[in-house]
Image (cartoon, rainbow, N blue to C red; front, side, top):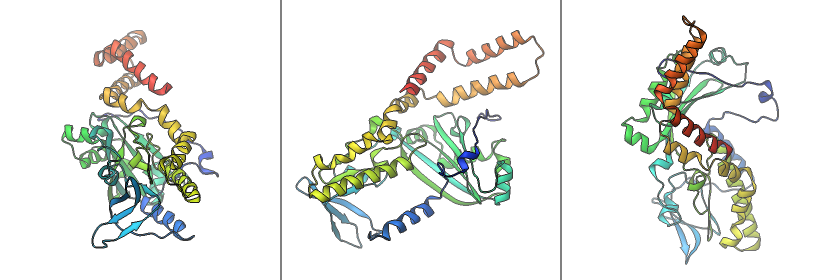
Amino acid sequence: MTEDSAIVGGFTSSRLAASPFNRLTAKRKNFYGWLAAKAVKPGLHSFLIHAASILFTGSQASGVDVSPPHNRRFLADVVLLADGVNSLLAEQAGLITRIKPNATALYVKETIALQPETIEDRFQLPPGEGTLIGLIGYPTAGFNGTASIHTFKDSINLNVGMAVSDFSQSGFNPDDLLERIKKHPRIQPLLAGGVTTEYGGAMIPEGGYHAIPQLVHPGVMILGDAASLVNGTHGLNQAMWSGYFAAKAAFAAKTSQDFSVQKLSLYRTLLEESFVLQNMKVNAKAAALQQDIPYLFDLYTRMANEAAYHMSTVPTMPIKAKRKYIWKKATSMQPLSKIARDAWRVLGVIRG
């Protein structure tokens, strides 16, 4: 996307709307409640409290301290840290270092209510089906970042975000980016008449594979966002799988009454054998690429849109001359040698 145009590409298939379902949109507050209910039913005890610190007996974790007004201690054989990207408990305990602003993204969300029939009509959807649209370029005001539109039955989620360091450098606040998208001439008609019902925000780790900390400590396993187990658009599913593997490792440790690093390292082994860490390894260079080429999304989006605009106009010159004109226009925005170097870098990331 640029200020006044967009290049659009996509894929749709009725197979995606058939069982076994592969992609779903779910509102987190509903999804988390559903998950918690499933866990409580077979006997899990759920406490909505704030853990202030990890308890240690020597070097071995033995539970957590709870903040006032509860002022309680919960003793445990294993502590699973899933407290988000800014894992203060792990940092306080010296298990990880403070996460860097350029390895952390801030994403914000606005939920806009619309009638189901309106959503289906505007996005050309059959009843009961949805869509996800990714947006790059203009939404993040010249910085590398992404935006997206998710449709639900009776609302649309508009999401946008970029590195925390870029917010600091640019002077933008997150709402500025949301407003940019809502006012875009290609997006505005899709949202017309909608009513904003909710705002939200989340910090997301974007350091990639090389930012993954030591995952296993005596009596402790780190998972989800706290472990930087996020791979592009695939975040929630990888976090959930890390929880599953951590649970298997905890069960094996409990069975043997051995909570050492060696025993709990089954967690790391299961992650390495699964798609989670394998995917992270394949995209290990992506984070560095976006930091080394800060203009990647913005400049090449502008070049592509400019070329597409001239290709779409009826020529008043010979076709050969028009092709030369488009080529000169593109290379005036970025020298050919630099285009080639950037393309080689991108290809290296894609090839893993």
